[in-house]
Image (cartoon, rainbow, N blue to C red; front, side, top):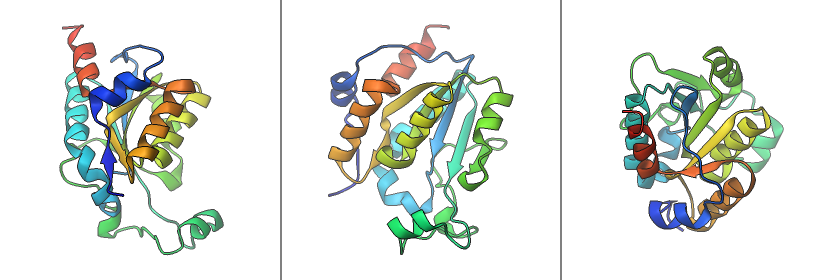
Length: 196
């Protein structure tokens, strides 16, 4: 199946079980793994990712990028599940994609370093907005982990993508049921416009 991002309106309203807007004074945007290795998966969501980044920047929300870089040697679970799928440090596969809105001074966290929670706490962040790839793997894991660690989580329906619509929508269903408020570009634009 081709990579997919959600149709914002249909998926967003279909799975919303609770409604809340992010607080720009307490939130950070996490852009997950928008890097060369995942370029084809990211492509359908890239316009919404760029819009989400711009909306968050406009609201004064810090933008943090993560990227997956495999350790050498690779740990057993990763090597077992993804045997031929290695992302080496310093390779084009590890680099963030142009068009994702990265600006000078944005924090970039390599996931193997586990600095993300420390950085968020140091910034006074209480809420995270999750965008990027893959919806059903790293994005969902990030949102669940944030929730478990006491952060309020928001999950973007249109600025996340994965390999199939079925997996994407299953993630939105899981997130809305117990871990995150579902948002999209339209919701963020309306929310951040309220304070102006």
